[in-house]
Amino acid sequence: MTSNASAAEILRREARFLITGHVRADGDCLGAEAALWHLARALGKEATILNPDPLAERYAFLARVAPFRSYDPAAGPEQVPPYDALFVCDVAVLSRTGPLEPILRARPSRRVVVDHHVPDRGEVWDAAYVDESAPASGYLVWRLAREMGVALPKDALEAVFVALTTDTGWFRYSNTSALALSAAAEIVGAGVDVAEVYRRVYQQFPPHWPVGIGAILGTLRYRAAGALAVVAIDRRGLAERGVETMEDADEVLDVLRAVGPVEVVLFLRELEDGRVKGSLRSKGDFDVNELARRFGGGGHRKAAGFERPGPFATAVPGLEKEAEEAVERWRAGRRG
Image (cartoon, rainbow, N blue to C red):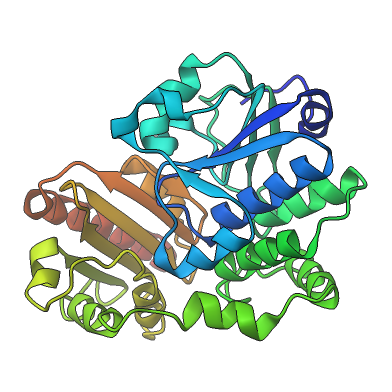
């Protein structure tokens, strides 16, 4: 990853920006995008947020904070507006922008990444505003605005707060640093309603949600002497319980990580196109980012993910076996 300009310089010089992020954008990605949109607008610039997927149901309220658009592959590249600079949030590889990748690679423009994950050295950027010690990508946009002397409006601050709270597990995960807490204190002091954000993100699930959570937990199996918890559910397993989809099911990871002997959680689910989506969590010093990278994904040391080709029933045993072997090697190293 190389850069020959700063993100601030590109924001000040260029006039039109396209803002995007990874497939199935989470709260951090969306919060960073919304805050960046407000930052660009405060500078008098033209900005468009265009994501590979529509807003997940739990984040639909963010549509009132910033104008999110989603790419429709059937409509073609014409829906991507002209732009002078591309800003990619919460991911440092264009391949993770899904159907947008070939269009973004073909368009001549400045490319900027804003991210707090372990950087991918294979991608080239004109500017990289990357800090692995940052608690969230949304935090980085907030910091960038402060460095540029721009006061973000309350809507943007709410988006940053969503980014901070969702990526830190409401200030429970290991990335809950003094940086995260001091930023949160300043944002709350500016008038962001903590209880309202919590209600919108965590207390608006549809009626089928607990049924789906129960179905997923019903597949639980322990491996590596109980250090690895695995859950894996396909679309048929959900449909049998009257559940069409479970895009928002990451709470399963926290439930399983709360089990005393469990050090690593592997959650596998079948996507609509038959591919396998994997989520990994660790509560100790096992590096799930390293394991996710073996599966073609990545993330943080304690939280990472990946996607693999299907069919689901064929892919799951191999993924589970490799995860079990990795955890067993880690356990042996600790004993040694």
